[in-house]
Amino acid sequence: LAPPPAEGSAAQADDEQAYRSLTALQGGPRGAQAARDADLSPAAIASAFACALDLRISEQHTPQLLMLLRRTLTDAGDATQKAKHNYMRPRPFVVFDAPTCAPQDEPALRKSGSYPSGHSAIGWAWAEVLTEVAPERADALLQRGRAFGQSRGVCGAHWKSDIEAGRLMGAATVARLRSSEVFNAQVAAAKAEVARARAADDKPPAAACAAEASALSLSAQLAP
Image 1 (cartoon, one colour):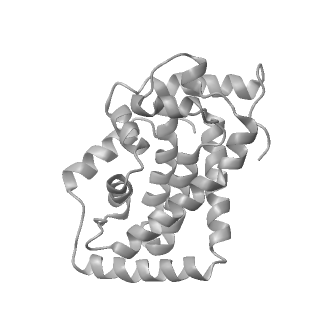
Image 2: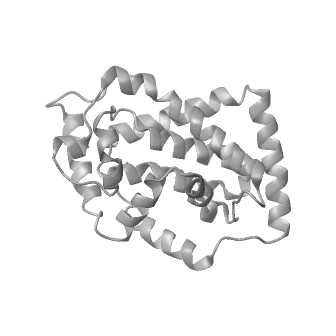
């Protein structure tokens, strides 16, 4: 990756403007959704893309799909580490001495580089992988992948350019994974599993999905 924007540059000014626009949403439903997107626990992994997929994801009913998401999380997250350590860019909430939407994460975030965003890489990689599993849901999945990364801007944990670079790393990770026999076998198993779950009409709760869609719409026109 090229270096992040330099201090005093037009790109850094753009990052700062995006920070102000996105963090202004912290106190409402978009901020609450951003806090949920910050959580990478096993339960959160299962729910993050369920509405976009229009299918309940669980250890009991879709174990192959859940394993695919867990493996992709590890690969995409790890792919950002060298650049994070190399650039050690301060995070926006540190620069502005402001709270985030996930205060429990702040001590660890202060010690790690901001560029590129690991969450953004993970979210975009998930979106790309899931479009292979369920191509009929591609539009909704890619929109959710974008919003997942954007949540890091709403939280104040990342700059706009961090999020964009994270998406690039997520896409690069999936491009590499496509040459792996293990990955392709896992995708095939997940695809067959999703087809069976679709036949059983195992959908996520409609009310929760409507609330998610409403929250995400509040930032749909904002960058990045």
